[in-house]
Length: 354
Image 1 (cartoon, rainbow, N blue to C red):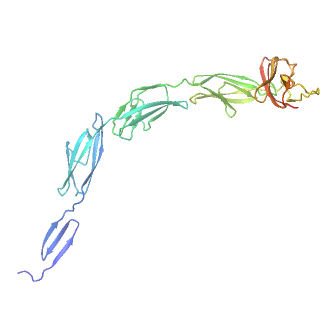
Image 2: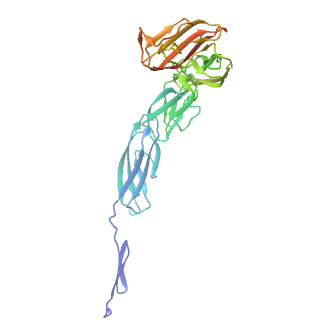
C-alpha cells in the first residue's frame, strides 16, 4: 500500500538532473552540445627532409582525448619529423564523441643571396633569406661557425662559402663568392716648402700616395680640403695632414713648416694715387734682394688682366690701353725666384685712389 502523500524534489547540476519520487529516484544524464574545435599549428617541411610538425589544441570536448592519425601511427596531440603530405586526425573524448580535421604539410625550399659592399674602408657581406622558418643562423665559412646576424663586417679579400640554416635545421648552401677590396691607401712621400720670409704665408705640404681608390681628397683638418695634392698658402707651424679616398679610407701624417723671420726679397705697397702730382703716381715692386724670373700681374674686380710686366724698374700708372681706370681695389700677383733658388709667389690687394 502506497503512502497517501507524495513529494517531488529537483536537483540541478551542469551535466545531469536527478528526479526524486518518494524514496525511489531516476538519474537522467544530459550532455551539453558545446562547440567542438580542433586548432592546428602546422609547420611545413624542408625540401628533401622530414622536418614537418603538427600541434593540436582541442576545445569543446570532455577530456581526456585519444588521437587517431592517418597516415601515421601517432597517438599524441603533437607530432613531428613529418614528410610533406595530407594528414587526418580523429579526436575522441571521454564521452565517446569524435571530431576530425585534415591538414596539409607542404614542402618548402629556402632562397637566399649574398651581397658584398665596400663602404667606409671595409668590406661587408650581407646575406638575405626567405621562405624558411625563423629564426635563422648565418655562416660564411662553409658552416663551421654560425651567427644570428646576417651582416659580416670588415672582411678580408678572399673566397667565401655562405650557409644559411633555419629553425628546423633546413640548410641552404649559396654558391661560393669572392670579395675584392682596393689595396690599402698609403702615403709614400711628403715634401714641405718652408715659408720664405716674414711677410708671406707660402708654405706647402706636397703629399704622394698609392693604393686606395681615386679620387683622393687632401686635407688639413679645420683648415683646407681639396683634390690637389699640394696644400699651400700655409704659415709656419705644426700640421696634421690627411688623405681620404673614394671609399673613405684614410691615411694621415704630421709635419712641420718653418718660417724664416727675415724681410721678403720683394716688398709691395698697398696703395697709390696716379694723379700726376709726382708723388706715388706709379705702383711698382720694391726689390730688396737678388731675384730672377720676376713677373708682376694686376687684375681688375672681375678678374680681367689690366697690367703685366717682367721689369722690376717699371710699374703701373693706373691706365689700361692708355685710358685711366676707375679708382678702387685691384689684385696683384708677383712671382720670382729668390737667391735661394726658391720659386716665390706673393699676392695681395692694392687701393687705387683718384
